[in-house]
Length: 311
Image (tube, rainbow, N blue to C red; front, top):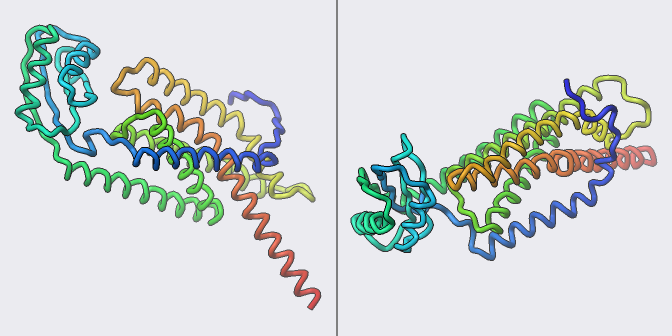
């Protein structure tokens, strides 16, 4: 096993108060941006629109197609290769025109753009009702996932760990959505897939730290070692694994973000932000909450024992 750190002893948990301030600040900034802009910007998967499949005689670039479509002012298009390099799927937002008129405008724009001969093979219309259904399904999917995560961790570890892990995941999701809002990016099905990936990534990282804590507590704990110090030991002992996993995912997301093209850009952006916040939240949200919750419970037990003794 590769080890980046030999016997690290950084005081992560001891700095949790400052991390709470940072987490609250990032969360408030994200929520403020979302409220100020009236929520997320949804793409046509959620709002409705038209899908056009076009096959060219000579393969154009995505930039050439996008430049040609910009002249018809139907909103930002999503362009994807479909099959081979000469065939494309063009998705346009819902506009106050019929699908037939959209087809005519697309044909005129592509002709005027000098892209050579082409054939429009199909035009499909996605109504707004489908979009609303997808929004509800996405919300239900995330909520159900969070409930099962809490149940699993509560059964495997304890209730405190399950609740703290879910709070960490909610923190990660809000920060990622806030980043989308601040950068004026659209919420699409690939973005939803990236969010679900980040949820799994964050929970997995949290479980690794919890598991190491349980292993350590199953051994002989040195006398006088507080729970906060035990949690800090677990975080330090898994530090090499966390950094290696995070950097590998981070660099992969960075390559997709900067070199993957327009189609993958928003997906990669969420992964890029989510890897950072997911790694951070394992220690400074999930682990920190478990430590303070445990201290609160232990403090109440001590006060109860003292009250009984005095009585």
